[in-house]
Length: 122
Image (cartoon, rainbow, N blue to C red):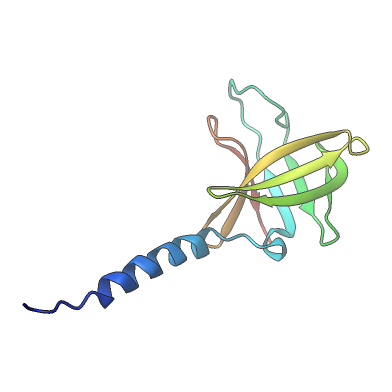
């Protein structure tokens, strides 16, 4: 009986998930900075800025925005997505926004239907 060598297949099966996870990995230091939201009309429903906005994520887990106000944020990691949770109004209200990474670009998605998102600039 001929002996087959399966190590190349096993290596691929191990490295492929690692590559996928790494390509989507968003660390806290990666999200710091300014994000620009460009307003455009759409029939979307939800809490979405009605004008251009800048969301600034600071290194002390605080944020500033003309739409969202000032408050604190945290990052929550899930199996299939990463969330940015903004807490405002003295911690009594919050919003969950998805963080997406495409290559080196990081976006904070408000609404997938109308393609509403904040895009990192620095």
